[in-house]
Length: 141
Image 1 (spheres, rainbow, N blue to C red):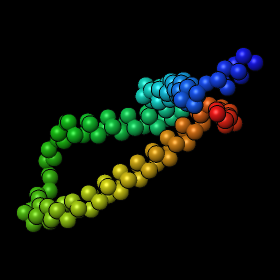
Image 2: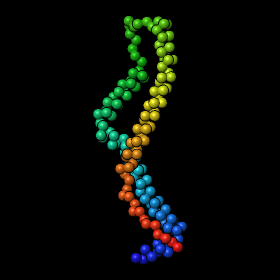
Image 3: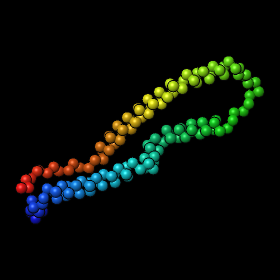
Image 4: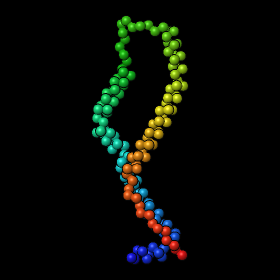
């Protein structure tokens, strides 16, 4: 009852400051939950636990690619000669494909960002706290 009397004697500015302080404290809880949920180390650990075979296969493929890139391939005894015409042809194809790769990169970036935004919105909406009670406006005349 004492709290109810003290709210009636508060000015609108004091009520607004009190509401702001309550909102800040609730926001602090949400920030703490989000920082725990979106810790990169925790996300990677959870992903590895959920998708073990995907991580193992990705590590194997990545290792194979690194091995092929870093170690030169052995020279073949009877290798095929590369003529100037085929080298020019592959250079022309690379020149023609360069703008296509740029457009594909932009499309992939756009898709990835929209996917990530949707994922974050869905994930963060699950971590919202209980709805705050709506206060009835009171006259402070």
